[in-house]
Image 1 (cartoon, rainbow, N blue to C red):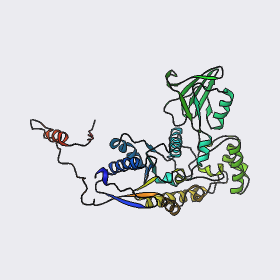
Image 2 (cartoon, rainbow, N blue to C red):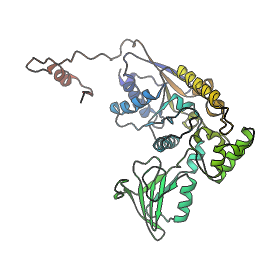
Image 3 (cartoon, helix red, strand yellow):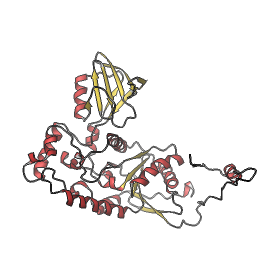
Image 4 (cartoon, rainbow, N blue to C red):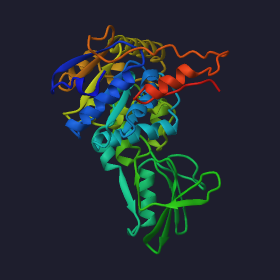
Length: 389
């Protein structure tokens, strides 16, 4: 397959890209993203995969073929519908970072498992309203920052070691923002930010300076006064009986994020959003794999778990229809975008894809790996060699 023959459809249209070999998808998608980036720099390629395995694989493989691309994964929560425990903070951090980059049109490729794409999200306005910057030389009120961090869902601790934590010690503020690889230490001179440095969570020693940092919210929903009030109101409207019997209601009323609270996310907002709401209208979608079967399976699982778990008066559940997008509605909404449907099968004539020649090692030969060395010397493209340790 050559770089100049990849079909990019117009908005509202779909092209089918058929691949011959398994594993060729990463190369094809890398070339598609590069071509799309050249033609329309602000047109990201959004890949919807049938499962999480392919999503993770493409996240690792696409940059090999196109290292200049900015590739992001929107991971799932790695919990089952209605589980009573919450995702790991690092997953929430990755999700918020990717959603922020999507909203800012700051990525070339976004990879999303279908199950993740079907779950309703917080609206874009929530993310933008609760993201703020801190810069060297900026005037900073520590008490205002403390309140802002708490309202954004950050936990006040004595020593910062995990995402979503902060501490205040005199004129020093330690923060571990969601989406950041390292935490930051802010040194104040009176009320001015004198320096911002990264630090090591194990040794707590400062590392290197940075000019500014971005703070994303610590959660995908607001647990401030307004968010709690809306949750309480919508909870009472949604569920019958005494809300005080429900632990989730009592915890949220106290500002506590109970395990599994993500499955009550719609109650924190007047209106939720979908993945497609975050995308620019000229985004290019790639539908990868058997999405219809994956969507039906995910819906069946959610409905089955709801029927099994919905009878606990102390933990009433939102029906799947409140949490997930209907399969037909999701696919219908994709029709407004330019789309590439990726399938496997017989490749069209004229493509340059081929299988590898025999590269076996001849152990008794004078040069046992001469087939491999010959291939490497004659092949003009990039080569990935995989070997057991």
